[in-house]
Length: 154
Image 1 (tube, rainbow, N blue to C red):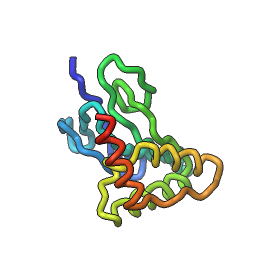
Image 2: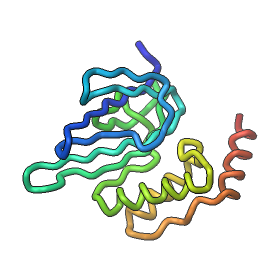
Image 3: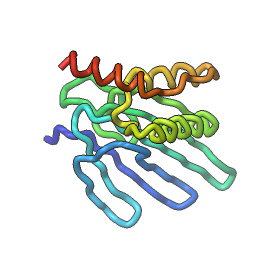
């Protein structure tokens, strides 16, 4: 049994598009030209985007920012993610998904890998966007505080 968290990615043009926005996969398995599985080591953070449509338009727009879990650890189930993950952010609806993607771009513009950003920042973004409020921007000073806190905790 693997200690990795596996994410199945599927790409059926203009029907089902599942992709990883950020994160560092430990393994990749290509199943065919439309499907692959990315696997993440325990503790790694990744953003998983799902979009589905039918003949009448978009059915699902969702983004989940997850932390891969250690085998046996409590986790939430998420479609296409085995066994599941620790949810840092979970939003649906294209306007909210688009806003999260913009915030991820803003973190990258600071020269910070979003997978290394403070976990509580993604919780903050989830909470603010869930109630249609504007989240605070991620800053270098907030990131430095996170790095110091993480160093002290380990």
